[in-house]
Length: 212
Image 1 (cartoon, rainbow, N blue to C red):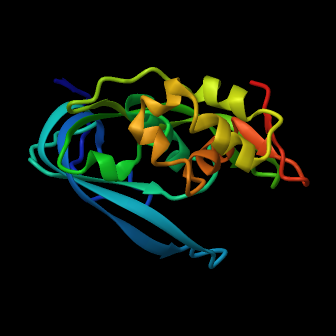
Image 2: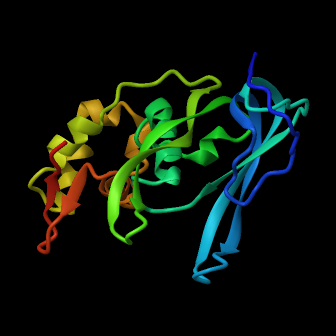
């Protein structure tokens, strides 16, 4: 185990979710939404707290002798957010419709590593900056399937949603992946790709591939 020693032990989890853990393995028992309010702006926000048991410490900034752990990630619909980093890492392992529900009772390896966020600067303007974010490296039993996102985006490019559905539901490559098929009728797949920035939709309802 890699351990960076510090002079003071602070076992509590702060409001930003900054556990002393930086990489660990654990079984995710549950997750829950935690509402909060910014003291300065009084803006309401939501965080998601993930609870783990049977924790094995791989890297920590201070001693961590506990068999349990909680990490907290601010919820956002933006792909360039801490939640976006976590969600993207899960989809990388479970496919484009993979989500946190699919990880319950599974052993996972999580690591805090850089991810490109959209942040507000001191002058109030918005820009991109890398910041450490929780991301999933392994999920028990998961062998990352072929990422069909580029293929699906290509199918969707230039089409209305009804034409995309028709094309995907008659495509043998898609029909061989039930986790994708079940996400098509309720628009979950298209909404996920729009949120991830892979697709956009114009005022006439036509989807377009976004440039990398």
